[in-house]
Length: 484
Image 1 (cartoon, rainbow, N blue to C red):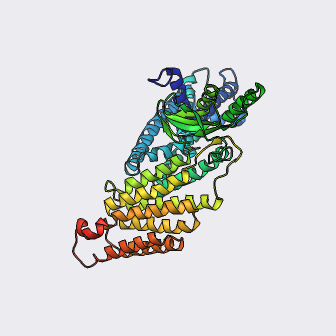
Image 2 (spheres, rainbow, N blue to C red):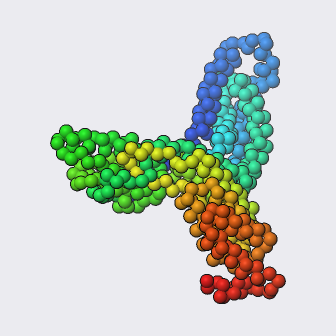
Image 3 (cartoon, helix red, strand yellow):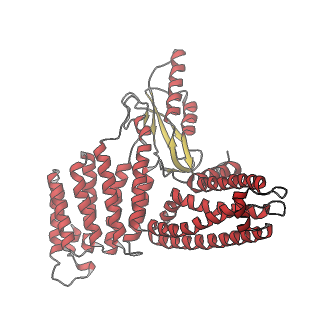
């Protein structure tokens, strides 16, 4: 095994090609292929109708008069091909500049969303395919072959392309709006969670009491992000080992695989992947370890379609960048709060993640915890930029989620609110922020967290004492209060 580059070059090249095709190139290539087939079909049709030794049908003679002889056709097709190439290159360059400008404000997640949109892929394939179609007809034009139908189709599709430029410019600008980008990520997170249901349904969340002993540990043989876990492959390996042990008259103690990583986790060389648990010694640990390593797929990039935590991380990055003083734009941060609240509300409505309590594979699901922790990060950066409206939205959102959460989720949210109080002195107590803190205190009291509710009330009262008094950020709350 080559640990320096994670495999031979052809494997890495194949992975790069698969990633490029899956993310963007497959649809444009398919559209260009359709234009190539169209060019081939039109060539034979033109050869049948406009050959040098055959007169065209009388009802089509007007086409021959309109497009002229081969020289006129070559000139027309040359003009179309040149114009299309110039128009395509300039338009795409301007659009990429617009995407780059948006990405500088909302991080490189803008590029990901732009490339993944099916409409954009079709647009790019259409313009490139039309250029190829016009060039092919220009090449085959000669004294013996007059591509009249090819020229007619090229003229019509060029008119369509000119209209599509306006549509493409509008859709690109529309896609660069923060609300559009955040909404697209929200939809992807919900879709990825649905795609993850099979993994959750085939595993369980906690260790079984019958397998308390760690008989071995599986480690990674290379680095990468976990994009998939083949639970069926692991389950078959466990069943084969137990069946062979029973047939040999050995112990029938249950074997359990506790995964140390989840979809989206990054592992390095020799990082733990799973613990092998068994009531006694596990003599077949080597075979099971190989099965676990083969079942955990590692890639250089995270899988947006099956990794909901990746979308949540993208929302967190957008919120952090926009809320920080690097951008000082509260609107995207508030939109991120709205998206996260909707995501969590939908998941809470669905109830706990499904699981198979008879499964021998333990998978810890931390996606909801990751979403709640994102609010904590946004609260930290809101204190750095003094965006009181963002902090108010965070407190209001957490308060609205509290009644819907299970007990462990309530503890996590209460912890996030209490930790955020340490930076409250950086803010001016606006009416919006004051009201949000009151709502958070009332929600925690209703959830039975009276001590935490009292802590929020005390912090709000301490900051309320700065109203009407000239203070700097460092003196807005007294040192005695800050030290408590």
